[in-house]
Image (cartoon, rainbow, N blue to C red; front, top):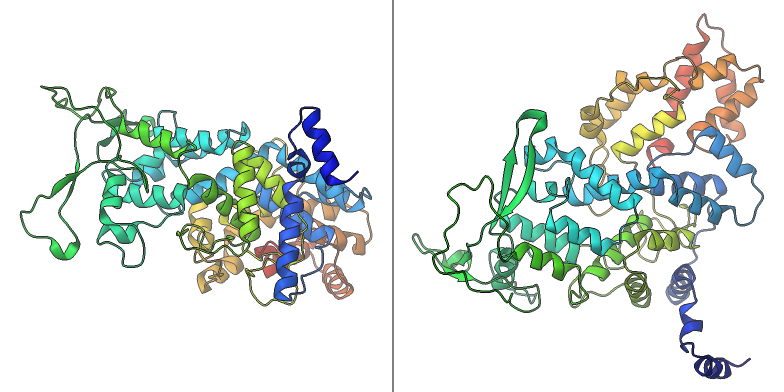
Length: 527
């Protein structure tokens, strides 16, 4: 039936004429727009990733861990044409999805080393709050509003990291949730951007009255975010105009790129409580008004900023890159695609799980990492990104690969300080890998790495030694457990010969083989 007749019938029976167009899934739009760009730029994309490469990649991206040997062999043996889609849906329903995404967003919202010790000390509470948002699939706009209200246990730690620093809150919130860099406007009107110092301090006005309140002590210490009823930002001009003793003029709160906050006057005779340790809830909350605006349809930045950020999380770079510097004149590499993702996210009520599913279902996400481009993060997404594993992912991957956790274990505490020190910040913010000599030395010599490998009841070495399988099958199991792929003939021959060397302690041969496989770039990266 011709399209016009379909539209006419749709109107007659009461359905919107746009239903046919709206039915196209986002992953199809993604692939169409990527292919259009490849044709325009005369680029040959990489081939489809192998099942092994896809399996490892999607586990790391969704769960923050690699699959077990059993999960790997089951997926590789599956002959269903829809097995990738089925796996994606299975992982999105896995409880580890929530913790894996919480790890990612914890780094987005806190970074590896927040300056405030209190935020570091109580960070697990914030991580738990984040994980609950993903476990319950809370819409992004709702959990951002809850974060900025800071009234739910755990969420308050975001503000605690900026204790007594409203200007730092302004920089972080504009960058993280609005995709806008304002730090230059802190000191002067930007010569090439529309943002002025008044814009910067207008946004700061929402935070200037916030107070971090404490109760308890030691491990029982808790924090709440109080808000004074008075207090203004004083603006005294650009840095070059500063003069000793110049107090400046008060700046009223202003929504970024929007209106001044409409605020009732302070009641006559109002006095702030003498102690700021337990402030009463103010009659009018600036914090609440900002949270409401950020999560509302009146905010033109939120949907576009998170659409660009989530795309970058799974595809390596933003459609506007860098992801937290979206300007009025920024040109997206794929403007139609960015609009489709932004609009789709709004239509699906900021459902991040929906967006993630559509991205990883796309052919673009499932390309191989090896193709004609020499770029780690190719602008046209003609091949998959290559990225190093985070410290958390490395530890999780070693646990799974070596079968470190066994039923009944009292899981010994991992010395996180060492792993975050050497593997905590492997990229420079633009996707470039920043390996170091100290990382290399840690991999090669640390007892903390060896601890995962050494033989204990039920782990990988113990299982292989106890097995009656021929050595070639044991080698295959090693590669499937560690790399999620079978060895090539050269690798199989080399490891088999090593395992058959004469030695009084066969576990030493297996330990060295596993250590060598883990101490490789293939294990260090998502491949």
